[in-house]
Image (cartoon, rainbow, N blue to C red):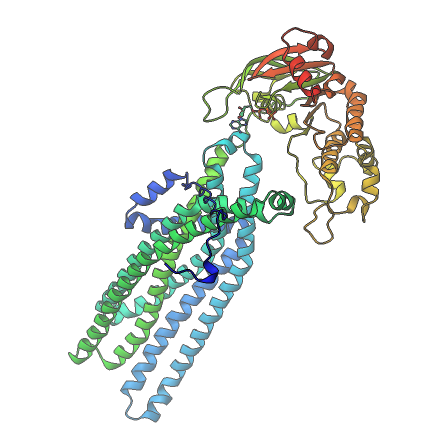
Length: 633
Ligand SMILES: Nc1ncnc2c1ncn2[C@@H]1O[C@H](COP(=O)(O)OP(=O)(O)OP(=O)(O)O)[C@@H](O)[C@H]1O
């Protein structure tokens, strides 16, 4: 073997690194729906078109009745225009073919020809009117469909999010919401085509029923082809929905400024690019695999259809030659069959498109039904700011988990005390916070605010009295003011906003912003401004303090804060403590010394409870062990 100078073998050269493993194949978890699709025959599918029409009409009617009426009226006028045009053409043909010379023929035929032209123009104008009304309707449909999805997400029980494949179904529903607009367009074209067909078909039937039959035949293969092709398309969509969903999430992570540092400094780019590329290739591969069958189906359908069109022309020729139809009637039949053919083609094409979009719309409706069934609807009991919260053998198991995250906890929290909740990762602290705040309901046992069981309480009335700083809080792309007042925007003035800001040591930072409280806190938006991680956390604490809630809960509130910020927060908690129940979840055990009581959770059970001094001096205490570990650096 010869070596070129560039192909030197260097001893100990860097071996090619093993390729990282590809991301696992993802499968859409809305299988129930897919099976329904696979099992459906063509007739079942055709039945979906009226259903999709009905759903679209209901959606459109609910957003703008006037525009729906305008569209229907224009459709009707357009159909009448076609009928009048065809009748006028028939009259003109009779004059043209019966007159002795061309001059006489034209003189006799011109009024009918003028009527035909005016009717055609009026029909076209009506069509433009329908188009205008649809354009006014479409943005409203898009907003209504989108708002419904967003609103339902926000009103659902948290357990909805834990349901298997929730994100996939949510993504499929979003596609459905986007297609709702297309459906409105399709519905308009489809109904218009029906009206046109009705007009033309009645004229054709009068001339010779055979012509209508042959014309109808020519469209059947195209219709069947359209439906099968739509099914192929939907199947591809269905098989790629999970990959597209997770790819969409990843895309955000790869392009957002928040994660840009981590991605670069930790050399994650190469693998993540490989991961993203793999997902793109998979989606692309599945889409390409669908292209061949799609083409075959449409080609066969078009060929069959063409064969039947030839049949129609042959029938027309045979009728005229055999004396079964006058030449004038044949002329009208040609115009009518052109109109009917166009209408039939539109019916088939848009029927298939509607069927196709209808599949997405059914994902949308299925998702709405699923989430509606999970909408917060617990009861009407209202609560006040709690004097005491009682947990009585409260247990909680996450959906699809065998073991409970919390085991029969009994506990009382009293107004005026500051309680620290401590435990190792996964001990159940955040889950307990969710139970106490009524974010989720106990799967057995009860959580009561004074005398009221949260299972029967109106959750909004409960949450009015909660101020929660969760582990992950929102960096809301809103003005600084709204970032503090969010949830209570209209209730207190700016004085209270500044008070909360000072309590967390953010007064100077907010004053230094270019537009003070009006500054938009979103770096990526024009004119927006960014805060540091600790400042965002201070703002989340300010938001909770601003609410002055009856139950104040801070879950790892100071993990990103400097010592001054942390000191300020805990001082504020102590100062405000007498009017509320305060619960702090923290891993920084020096902070728990300020609590009146410490609850130590271990694997979903209360392991110990008491003051800091009493617990650390207890032999075998978990808190003492964790504290000793925290000091051993
Ligand atoms: N949405 C969820 N679905 C299923 N299991 C969950 C969910 N959230 C938490 N868990 C499980 O419940 C248990 C308790 O979790 P929890 O978040 O309450 O722990 P934690 O004490 O707050 O932990 P950390 O200190 O890490 O925040 C863990 O085993 C966790 O895996």
